[in-house]
Length: 190
Image 1: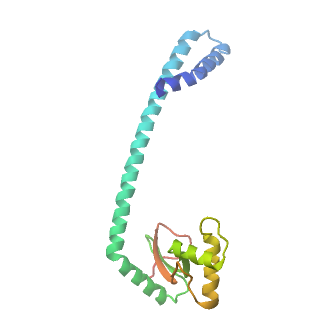
Image 2: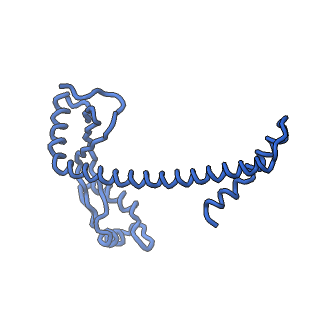
Image 3: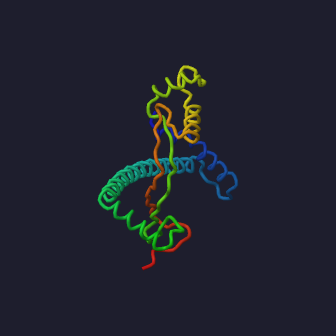
């Protein structure tokens, strides 16, 4: 059975219920069968309209996905070509304003710098596993990543030594662009 027929059969009780209510309390005698027929015709039209709306909604969703993909490609291309210049300008603008805020609000959106702290991550799990086994760290059949990360962080803070299999990412700044209005702040002053 098709979805159209399923919807019609599912909602037919509403047509019958509505016509019973309408004919029961109406002062002018109405032919119940004519009302039921008219109700079913209305139900069929509504289901057909709904199916058309669903198809249209899916078409619009597909177009939106294509548009978003194209916009992302444009954004990536522009960031590749001009991202460095924009980041440099943002750094200069933040410095010109005294450096208290790490963002610049423009009419089109917000340009922001964020300091990302130094981090540790397991780069070579086999080396880390071998070292952890050698040191008697709690192991099951694989490396306990959280325990090893904690041990590596402690060793780095206390001795400055990087445990085997670990890699550190130095503190660095990231640059981001958020389009649209940001809460608070004012646009770039000329």
